[in-house]
Length: 462
Image (cartoon, rainbow, N blue to C red):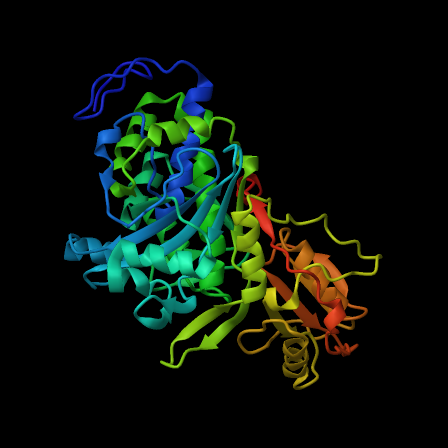
């Protein structure tokens, strides 16, 4: 690669481009590149530089929507066949051949293309795959490639997919390194021998291989659900880094960013991606929202003995219905007041909890879990114990993005103290007050809503 000033950067096989007209134009293309990075947690689409280098794939898309509201299915494909034994060992990826979907997300562009909603589909989702019976959703690609993956997602969500984008998950490493790394933050320690990742709680600057391990690890309490949170955090960090002055003002870094990612993308239909980028001129990080599918069972055992998750069909139908109608999803409200009487704002079935016994009372954690499950909450795993054993009052600890869920938990545990802190998800530390948890009244179950976080909220603060 060579070139002089920005805009004169020349990529192999491309013509020298004239300087772009404005920072806004550069920014709009980078928004698209960040958007495309969600499928691979890496692959990008800075398509103005070398659109002919983006590959095509037949996913059976029958109805494109170049303008107006649009739904995009992004599939991250994990292909290892062409890796050497040394590369497989270095990346801790194993030696399986073939292709499998590592990440599946639905991206909705609003009617005016000023807002983007990204919904992560848990790869362990137990669903019906057309013509194949019930399996995990990520099996669809293995059974029938892009076409069956698209059909399965359309059937599960009820959405019409207007564009399919497939990216190679292993391209993520080069993308991160081309941007100089990404900033991530974890509230809990991570020790994962499978990915070779070891992180202490706090903020970290990660290079490509480490960032891939961070985005893929399941070595935390909520397994694949925590993994989704980390992936969304990494996506936001990539978008932020791509839009930073350090990338825009550095021709060499910008060219490396483009060159390292174009070869990882395949699309259907093969139409005007540049036109799509132009339509995204007004999107900011504040207008990119991430959501997760509401779940009814996070510890489902399938008939085949596999561990899977089940969607909350009512809440999921409501969420995808709002997306189909081009309506904004609900956003988290302000942190709940400790003095106010909490009210349920999220259905208990959408909330996963961790229970810890903060006393020396034997079996208190198990009894509390049973009561919370009866109430309707998801409580995977066995209750643990805190190091301190002198908790007199039950405490509900929640992360900054879980205020609405914490309010619902507090409504189920009268007298419990709400405490915002740096934890992953929600923890109930049971005190010697031994809270009495009743059964949820049908009338108390709120209308299903969806919690979202913007890309800006996902970015770690140093």
